[in-house]
Image (cartoon, rainbow, N blue to C red; front, side, top):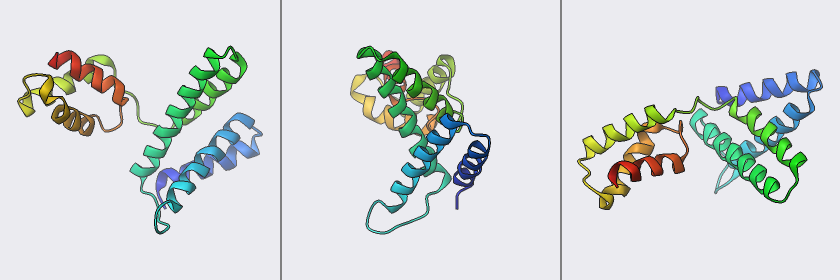
Length: 150
């Protein structure tokens, strides 16, 4: 079993013991998503830490998008709940890169790949996403690549 999944389960147990309703509900939701991913496909399998991180990223993105949708609909209470759940999930994700670090990584990738314009964006995006390794959202990476190739 992955260490991250063990940590999620242990944190769920402690959240239940301390009667932290938000944390308990959020961790249950995340563990349900991990379990669903494990049984998806032709045969059940155990997820690695990287795959569990992928599930966590997806869940964090869902919380952000739901909070925006609730804000747009004028439902501030639900938006606040989604943001709070997103913060719980974000606690298990690696720290996000700031703009300067992201720009430096993309500049390095552009130099290594020899990209000269927007026609090379696909090649640069593939290498940049690999270099970033989930420490920045794809939209931020794409915006920075466009800015540097533009």
